[in-house]
Image 1: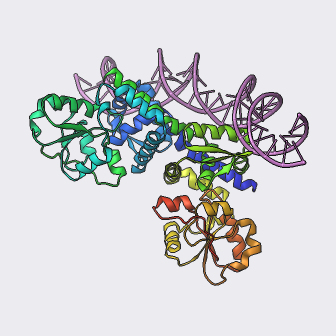
Image 2 (image 1 turned 135 degrees about the horizontal axis):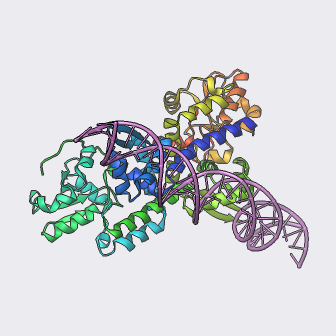
Image 3 (image 1 turned 180 degrees about the horizontal axis):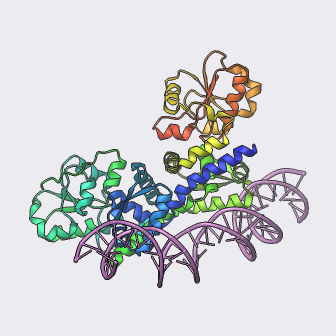
Length: 227
Length: 227
DNA sequence: CCATCATTCAATTGTTTACTTGAATAATGC
DNA sequence: GCATTATTCAAGTAAACAATTGAATGATGG
């Protein structure tokens, strides 16, 4: 092997490793996951990922140096967003690999979610198919801005915080499938709990918009459909 | 946010980060790239990635702890292989993100490959289409074992080391497209150089079997087609 | 059973990294 | 112009990491 091709390889893999390093810290992955749901300010990210603002800012700069996210100053705030849809693809790829291959992942779900939704049969693919076929009422319980940034076609938006107030907007008879940010977000679990107490037929879908898009399915943007 | 859902999230993202950490070192990425071409022993990997055997072994154990690769003892040797095709998908995703978003990547290619193939117009997609359409003779210059583990359908196998000896097996008139392990592997560049000196119409295709498969195209296995 | 060979282990080095704290910068409204 | 607020910077600490070296393990063939 020639000396110059060794140097080339070292330099090339080092660049690829810049991306790898950026996604090697749990907190940065959480930030990326959040950013894949839509743009956010530093403070919002810090709060939602349970980080100090300074620490969040530092992580965001590492993500930015790896060109995975972009920042834009908007008056007093700085808004961060993913730099490319491919970035969400990378995150999905990492998460799905962790879930497929790390047995600890299933263990964690069992440990922390036991008393709640963990006992549910996981219908995964089948549930997504029914959602896609329009056989159920789909409920997006994330904050409205995230709903607007992209949601499952036909989904109704009622943020978890407003669910009790607005519960009358939902159909009593039809089955309801609630989703939120993805498997590590528990908002949909809470929503299902609330709905069932009031006599609704509700179920949680673990998958979020990322998984939806990973299957090559279309998302809907902006428009806020009436329930 | 409840305390228990915070713990759940922390634990979940930490697992995802195990995968991220595994792909955060340049040398581990090089090892993964090699393993995506086919299984190998520790010594072969160490030699091909320019690592000490002990160091390579250590990196491989980190990859194995993240369940990205598997090891099997075969007599005196230990054979490593990727644990899942999805792992190659992750590597491709990282590499393509690095190439799309890190400007330094293009700079590196320019710097190290200047006098050689870098001046060539990069035809990328168009070239792959012609290869796929069977308009050219496709030449796989990797070692035979890698060819056997998976190659572009219809490709002829002549490892770089044997090219000069076996050059008569190739058609003089038809255009030849040579490929190897991927963009950071320079064997195909050498091959094209040799071929052109002997009057062949030859071109390098930067993409390897990983990129081929990333497009959802079929690979051929085992059979060694006659040129 | 002994020598050989591939691989792993263990201990050590110098670097890098995540997080904390407190101060600095920069845009906004009074 | 001055106080307020969001973000970044800078310095420090403890932990994690990559690479080196030399010894240990464990399978193979004489």
